[in-house]
Length: 180
Image 1 (cartoon, one colour):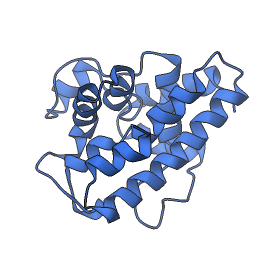
Image 2 (image 1 turned 180 degrees about the vertical axis):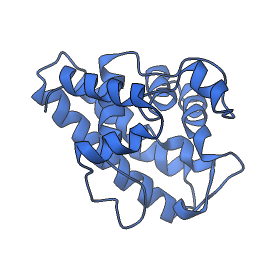
Image 3 (image 1 turned 90 degrees about the horizontal axis):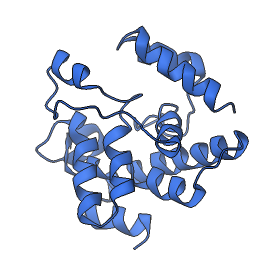
Image 4 (image 1 turned 60 degrees about the vertical axis):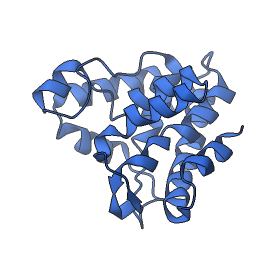
């Protein structure tokens, strides 16, 4: 089953949400592929494209009215929900991208310190492919009216700074690792 077909399966009957998530995910996939190609890494390009297209599949089950999603889970849970979905679909590597793409990653300390409704475990990108997708995702919003706009590096830094200077340091490290 293609990434698009999987998204259609889980966003069944919710064309508005599917359109938002697919448009966002396509931008993320294109950026991730460009980063991987420019950085001349030994990255798995087909995997990067598929996983980037699927990274937000869990949004289909969260409560995010601005995204036309009316599930029961908080938005922050979309990563672990996506992991469950893709694990059940037989895509364990893709599933890990879902869980690990939130910001520059979440640590167990982040989860407990912020009292997030998530398992208290490390959910940070662990592979080159995962880091590239998470990096690309930081540059695009799912907000209506902003779907086509790519954020600047300074805008991304400003957003990450709200979660602490250590998050900005991770982002800056990724920029060094993956020059584009």
